[in-house]
Length: 433
Image 1 (tube, rainbow, N blue to C red):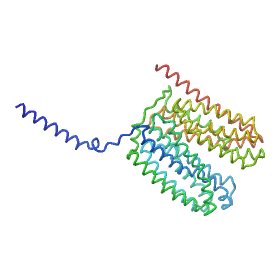
Image 2 (image 1 turned 60 degrees about the horizontal axis):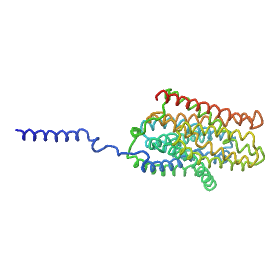
Image 3 (image 1 turned 90 degrees about the horizontal axis):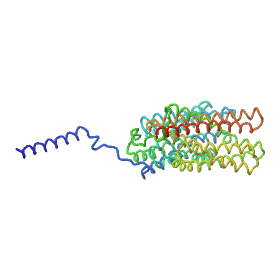
Image 4 (image 1 turned 120 degrees about the horizontal axis):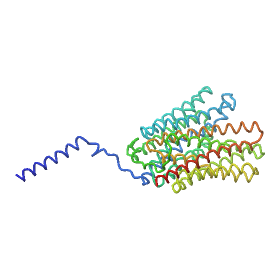
């Protein structure tokens, strides 16, 4: 009897196991491949993201290069053609929010596929533009499509790392600067050889093919993971006695403030050097120096953030940027301006990516891309407003001194917000302890 009972129990146990396999196949055969943050696979994803960002970021710089020839063809004013750049920035900022939401819900692969289609179609439409308003409108779409290469991609990269999260975010953010270094001379060469229309068509085809291929490789590395990949991300590490929405608002205001200050040298350094008699070519060299050292700054700030946190990294960058702006007020010699512009590039490059790091340190991973997109949208508004208001101040005073002072005041607002958040975080830590 005992043997018969044991045999019956064994059969029942086997039957239950078979039933479990049949009724729940996903748990047995379709489980997502295990992913370890900071692993070799994470670095492979990061390398692909950097290349995708460097290609997709071309649209942020194309309009700057083609502006003179487009102005001549449409017989338009410089201001009318420049509206295309404004719309590009607006599309870039708004796209960070929209595409960020898509990323949080459906995953970066889906968001990037939609953005690639938008960018490629917009380039083709730009090449076929027959009126200025059509050209301006499609650049809004180019900005919208390019947005996936910044805020959403930074947020996504933050899920792949724990120990080196700061470095990963800043490396992805550097794709925008790499694009600014590589694409302008290539686009200018294309305009000279085949014209601005054909250059846009070629860009659309190139971006569609290369970015799609890279996206397929990235998808393979992610094992087909979509939004569920966020579930494996590290939880928030920074506790604050305020809601997530309140923190988003404060960081958005801080982003506006720091970028209003940042825009003064970046937008007006060429004109400033022309006014001083050094020539616009010298100003362009200083701008190029800022961008090149900005890459160094972004990567360096990533190393720093991994050691002291995103909030303290933002504080250091804000203080340093304020000092650089202060130097512009007191020194205007040629050598001095080169040195200060180099310092400014080293100081400001890591500020904007710090917001993405703070979001991942203080907010849930499932909201990261949307929250980062909102804050980056605020920073884009700050850059646009800062460039405009600095010109208005110059027109009213006949000097850039007041414009630099205005930038310092906005930088002080950014500094005050960051210090306040650090104090709140410290108090929360003491209460928890």
